Each structure stands twice: as C-alpha cells, then as structure tokens.
Image (cartoon, rainbow, N blue to C red; front, top):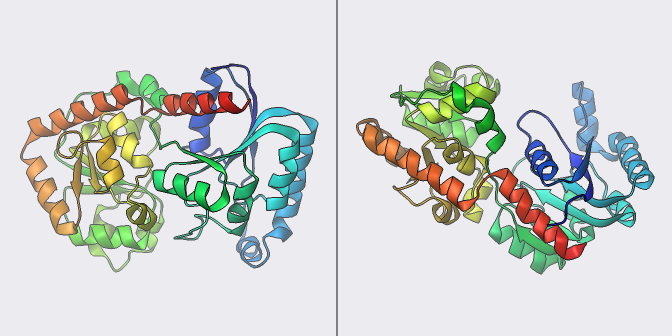
Length: 344
C-alpha cells in the first residue's frame, strides 16, 4: 500500500463518531489527513424547523466553504462520511479538485427508515462518487446495480486504540448483570420493556427517561447517563453480556451494526438479534448468542446467568475471532487503502 496520500475527510467528529476511527486508522497508514466538520450546530428549535422546511437556507454557507476548501488544497482523496449537509452539486463540483472522491455511509443511501438516517441530498449524490463504501453487503450490491458506481462492503469494526488505552485498568471479573447501551427509539424501549429483568441495566441519552414515562421497568432500570471511554470498555468486558437491539433497517437487510464488533472486540459477550450476516462474523453459541423475541432473550439471559464458565468461554472465543479475522477499524482502513491503490 502506498503511504502519503493526501486526504480531506468531511464528516462529524464528536466523541464516538465513526470518522474519528477512520482518521486514526489512515494516519497510522501514513496518510496526510485533514478534517472538516460538516455538521450544523443547531442552537434553537427555529433552526431545526427551518432546516426541515428548506435546508438549503442553512446549508449554502457551509457548502460554499467546502468548495473553497477543496479548491485551495488539492487532495488525492476526498472522503465524505454520509454527507447529509452537502448538496449534490457540491459533491459534483469538488470532484474536480481531487483524484478520488469516496463516500462511507453507515446507513442506507436511498431507503430511509428514520429521521436522521438520510435525505434527498445523499441519494442524489451517490452517482458522483468514484467509490461508495457501505457496511452492508446487500447495500453495496444494490448501489452498484442502481447507480453504476463502484461499491465495496467495509463492515463496522472496533477501536483498537481503546484497548491499548484502557487495558491495564480492567479487572477480569464477570458480574451477574446484563448491559444495554445506545440511543433511544420506541422499538428498543418496547422490546426491553417486555423483557423486564431486574438484572438488566440501561445506559443512553436522556430520551430513555423523558419518552418512557409510561414504562415503569425502563424508568427503574435506566441509569440516566451515556457510557464513554474507560467506563464503557470496562462494563462491556465485565458484564455477563451486552444486549444488542438492531434497527429496523438492519433486520430488513439481515446486516449488522457498530455494536456487533465493538462488544466482542472489547472482550464482551454479544447477545444480539439474529441476522445471517452477524452469524457469519461470530458463530452462534460459540462466539456470540442470538435471539429473536423478548421471550427468547429472557431465556438466553437466564441460562447464561447460571453458566459463568460458558460466558467466559464465549467471550474468549469472540475476542480471538475479532483478532484473528482483523475486525478492528485499523484493519478496515487497510482494506480501504488497498482499494484506493487500484484507482490512484
């Protein structure tokens, strides 16, 4: 792989954002990476309403800045993560100022299952990319067939830097509780409310509190904060298992999400809704545990709670599989780098 590519990455760079993992991975490969934040900072409700009615009103200045930045500094690669705030004509324009323009979309590019998963700008821009990366095999095939764009599947991964940073702080224990962490949505809260296990702890955004006032179980078991850094890493490793509830789109696609790799990669036991793609990454009942209904989840949790040695064995198997199969984001970046070599 050729090092030294000049890359401009356009995306969002908040704590836990996918873009940060990619930046780190490409820097390790010797890329010269510059970042530019294309997320608008909505400071009031009025701005949000205006954006829904006429997003170009708020986005024109941002798009002009992106074009000027790309004109000023020629890059080998412009790497756009998702790109909801970029006009299609902006993507078409900045393509003139780089050798390769690529997109990585952690959602579906033209079938939108929830607000925030995509918009018309993303769908209309696909045709302008030299390379389109998706986490899903099915989406990659669909994009190539629908738009004639070279498309590759690069699954999600886990951040090996987190392991390097926090490994020495971890004590090898397996507490007798289960963990769920993630953003609130109605489907997830309804599912967990059917399970109703006192040994299940829920972490996430404040909406878990404000939007579940009628769900007594959620109100009692929500810990009223998100998990980051060392605390997240330690809880993944130490809890008996981590519950993974997929989005509707993941179930329809039979795909996976970020949690699929993050939990095993950090030494935890993944307990997830079943999809064929996940089972290809982690063998059922050997490297992960899968379920279909709230009743089946309850049964699996009860069984695991009574079999500590099995829990530890599955954790070990999953961690070995993650390392052996190269599921880290550093390895994902190497895969993308090898693809870049074919075009540059």
